[in-house]
Length: 122
Length: 515
Image 1: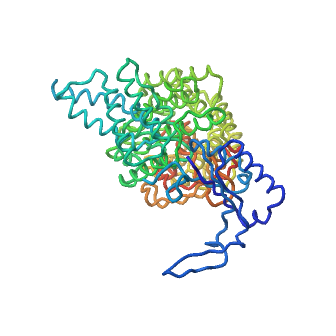
Image 2 (image 1 turned 45 degrees about the vertical axis):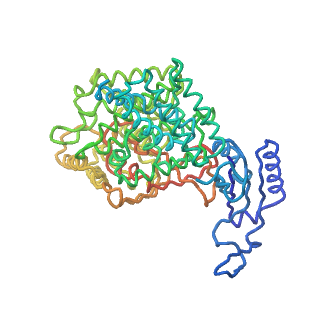
Image 3 (image 1 turned 90 degrees about the vertical axis):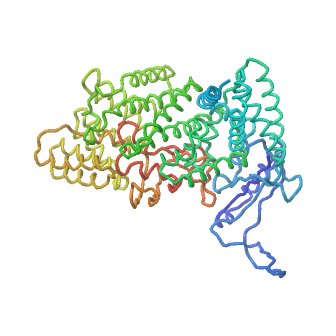
């Protein structure tokens, strides 16, 4: 099973990112790789760097900023391949951001990207 | 083979083996809903075939084989995940093996219980899920016990089953240290079934006896599956002690009878004996826990049937222990009452006064306890005030009458028996909070926001967004626990029943927060 880990962070948490936090994130990524469960993922830059795009009536719309202004933003994501939810939860609990942010864990559909997950749409 | 004897055989299998069959199929497939569908198809096939072909020698193995074929068909059609395809093939082999040998198929109900009570499952769905999968109780009956519409209940159950399959919640018995916390969820789910049973005690067409009996049945199953888990025995003992008193709880005219005034001759001796046996076996493990403590308090009350007295100092001691393990408002109130009853009313009242006012505003047991303690201290007008407040916080007419009569008696001041009520009602839960209930008896209209001091949220990381909703579940349960009395006022009605609308925010780093 492949799961996405979605890290949600407040603006303050974004602002507090320092070398130590980045190093902790890197170490976590290395641990995932060493365990053979890492599929992909990265930390994201601040929402101020975001641009949102949509296509409506054949017209491309582009606007500055994240999709919605909320208290918390997607701060990073990871995709892991583990046998089941309990194992996924164990990995999520080790995520350095878990101590101050919320991490959502959700199975991948694997429908749009062949080989992206084990599960086909139902 | 006559039609009726085939039907009798099918009913017997459904009654005795349903939970085991579902657990076996679901644990292999990782899919509860799929297992239920397949098994119901298998039962339908049996209804068709057995009257003509005869009842197979191993009815369960026959059903499993049919069910597993059905699941493989469905899987292939749906192209479910490949790792499940593998488990299906394994299931197929096993099912063949079971039919060929004399082995009984493995009992996977414990794994199923852990899945039902998994922290990733909506707390409001856990108990219904257990009742449905382990005992085979239909959604409509569960809905009526939980006072929600059958449609809402089946939706809740479907959502939970989809989550189990889609998020791949594993069928496993967790290992320590995770085990301790996860067992708690299972115990809580079972106790919640029991206390939900209490709720409908005085209602017409009550499903109480059925649900309470179901909870005890799952409790017995858990003890059988986890023989060396003392808390499982503690829980069973607690439920049995409470259940033993069901005939004595209300007078024939419907009047509420406080625990210490109940006619102990009406208590069920066999249930009390069974409870005591479990409590003794639990003690042998020398690992005290909340349910054992709560059961022990009930055990002391039960002992009145033999000794004629209630050993309050011992109850006070047990509450002391409980307040340390679970320092919720309920155990604090219970402790204060027990201290007073043990002969130190002033000290008891002081303990009561230490509980922060913000936590007790709508907490009826506190006000009943306060009334009784003030009465013991002979402060009549303050006592009256407290009783009036308590009466205004209950939704149970029998209890309200009782509280009002206590208030009346303050006038007459004929030394009636103190405190029972408070004792009985003391053991709530750790709730701090505003609870605004539109109308207790109609759960649809109830909205509460409850903030327990601590919480067993699982992967819950502070900070908002996807903060999990989590509940210690049977809040009322615990409340009920010690006193073994009928839920009252601000009771379970709002705390337990409409759990869908119960939002509990638990800011916990991981696992159990120190309380």
